[in-house]
Length: 206
Image 1 (cartoon, rainbow, N blue to C red):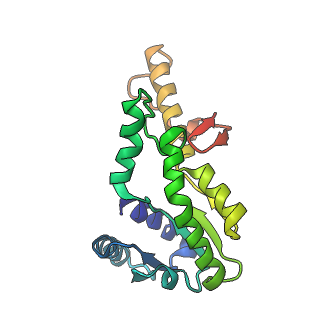
Image 2 (spheres, rainbow, N blue to C red):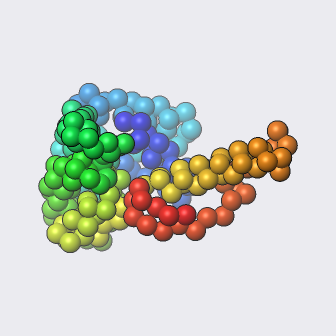
């Protein structure tokens, strides 16, 4: 819910996209009602021309869309807990466990069929040139599957690069302050740090 809300904030912050119509879909009526209520409050507070439509039906949500965005967690937190706990039982500490190793592979096994079902609905009901934007991990495996088997142009998106940029700026600030290169009140922000990065999701080199 929180991720969807932040994502919508980013989209409608672009003036040219403020009048976007969003089709929100969830398998949980409770969660769907919560996110609709939150984003409608945000829209009203900012006097935006944004339109919200809500449905529990995936095919209905995708119909006539220009873009489809996936932010699902297939299996919920219960399955995610198993992705962490089972490898840990055998001495494999994955930290997060949603990208690689046993947890990431199991997460992909659950998620790829759901994403391919979305691709099928996109092919059959969305605009002909619809692009699938995926925020769901494990990113590399999911995007590969959708592009190879889903028949829909799919792009993976993640805020990890930006997060890493902030971490680098914070580290430089601490190093510079500890070595007397900046005053106590001075800061280092991402505007002060240029980066070049490469890699796959959650395995990025800067």
